[in-house]
Length: 364
Image 1: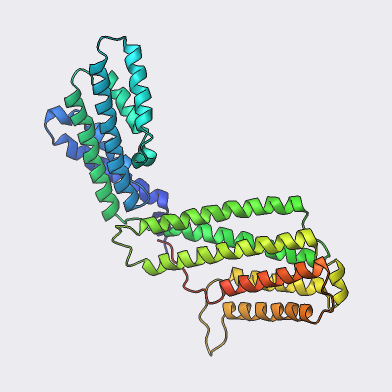
Image 2: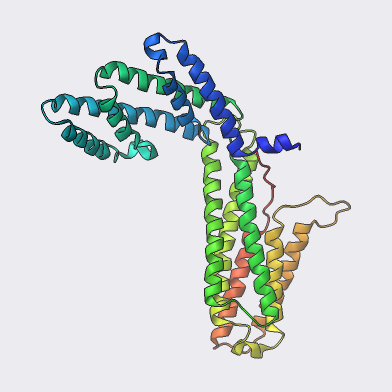
């Protein structure tokens, strides 16, 4: 893929192109209207920019919610102004702003609620001489521009937001793999992270997982009213599957790591089992990391297993050795033994979650 093609996959580039085109079209459309409205052409440009969002559904939602908020603000300003003609302007402004903030609590307006107070103050300070004309110019042209913005978002490579989601999944996966391998390496040296160190790592992974979940949710929103949804439905479904599987595995890894850090089952009474507990546990963690790092099958010739199949086979063998170590132990009343058992169960559940996950997502 060329550098230009890669650049056009960037969500911010796509939004910039759509916003620029929508603004230009909105301006041209507004200049064709009668002079009473065309003098406010810049309001159409404002509406176009407001309506260009990362998804078609978000664009449509922003358009009608913003225009509704503007109309509510205008109406409120006119009513308060007419009802308080005999009082000082300062009191009128205070009432307009206070009541506008109250109206903004209406949940229907969502994140566009602040337009109520903005429009109310604008009407009171700029459009009070001819409220009807100003409202028609401002709200009408904003609606026109918003409609153009929604249309451009729908027609011009309507975003599926796959690129960002793929990157967020890759980042979370890389952090999880790094953590598992680091724990394995430390176990081989007879060490584990301190509780404070693990809390710091858990926060870092938690941030990556939050971003991954948000990106997945954005992909789901992007599928609504999107003409590309059918074409990229398989990729979007794979992203959802990979994200949720990785999320579940991260929770399990967090639990088992906490057990290793707090109970250190490799170095307590359970070590009397023999069989190199540290090495067996470290191998199991390392093999689990291999599966996490190879989420997609790869084509191989002559019936040879691909890297993912080999990774799963290696993890199963390592977990079987750890399970055998537990089953052959005569120790049954040691905290370390119970912690190691819980760690083993957690790794089995993580591997079951990762098993048979395929279908590599392609960014778009």
